[in-house]
Length: 275
Image 1 (tube, helix red, strand yellow):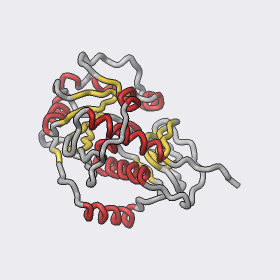
Image 2: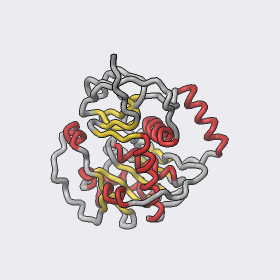
Image 3: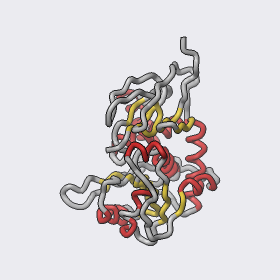
């Protein structure tokens, strides 16, 4: 009989972040963002493959009532330039290997934080350094995260994502929603529980890129909820080893192939290699 306790939190390849770690790190990051001037209604753009840092940055922005703006990492420089300007971004969080191809598109007043791709991400995508020089001033995201001291005062109504279209008929178009009321949030939580099963003890596979609206919303909601609550009485069992092409969130699984065939067990969640 299996007696080992399952891991509860975010699993990304060999990396793990417990519920408590996610809550603590996102609080610290939110405090750091606040000291850099990020306020309710501001935009924090994220140009990354599926990664734990993606979730933490989006969750921290949400705590401040700001918009997390995921950018498709396949976009060309002109499309990135448009999104950064249209969303009035205060900062950009970007994987280090992606910055060289879009650095000229980043306005000088946008603060840039680079995230070094993890070893399992480099293996999955065949990435080899050193990365091309961006020719501009950048800051290391991990150093910023570790030196930040939170928490900042959280907004009663959290922020959300501002998602852009793919731009197939022109430039990408963003949707900036007004912050929901407390009543709307409660209704959304109940509908998510009934329709999607989002609640204490659940696990799910996020098998699509986080720059898409539904995967991002699902993943960040899972991170936010697991940071705020956990059910010690929920039934869980062990987990299988995920392959190198799997990335973040809050469940466990076994996969085969690009997007994977998953055998779920009750408990945590993960994101697969993006498209």
